[in-house]
Image (cartoon, rainbow, N blue to C red):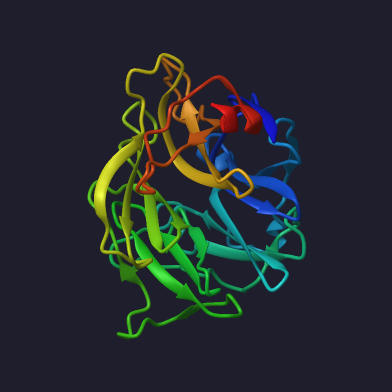
Length: 308
């Protein structure tokens, strides 16, 4: 396998990526990073080879969300029983509207159009202090679907019903369990390797160079999380700053992970000027995530990897 990544993937402003592999293709779902009240739909990038990317715009059918009067952003998607479920944030409650939060839509195709599954928000109020934004769906090996989400410095996990219309309480009766790790701001993301759960989240300020990605590991999807460290940050980079809000791709035939994230250009003064990027996400001998190095262009060649 050989591919070349050129960062950013597109000259337009895109943020909050969720990356998946469906139907033999690579998919990255993103916020169209415009002034907040102008973010009215979502965009998807799709590729057969990780080098060439096609852009699909307006993948949401917003007619099923008549209460959405403000921005839509930060998507997540997961496949279940042949359907693709798509969750996104809207309305920035309670600032722009009293109705909104996390919405759920569904499609028969990973390309959409994604149509409303409910006649109300999936999560329409605060639980444990977490603003209902920045959702991330994680499907465990046994098929159990978990929803991670939260802003305002709080993160929750909830277990989805089989029909994806709501939630199943945990064994202790709790529906929304708070799992906030230290230094958490937003952008949760879960990756499982073997029996270990690797939780990632964004810290710092999303509009500036303090934005970064932290990680920690656990034996269960809800923690407790240990070995907390930063794996993506501006550091001494001269090519970009403020990287964060990540997803990832896994290439099983190569046993290689890729981090998908957004970042700002050096000297950025516009918080919305965020750009979609992909870089290598390598692991150490213990299976822990190593620091990610930001690049402008890089090539992966499996032959070179095998022969050093």
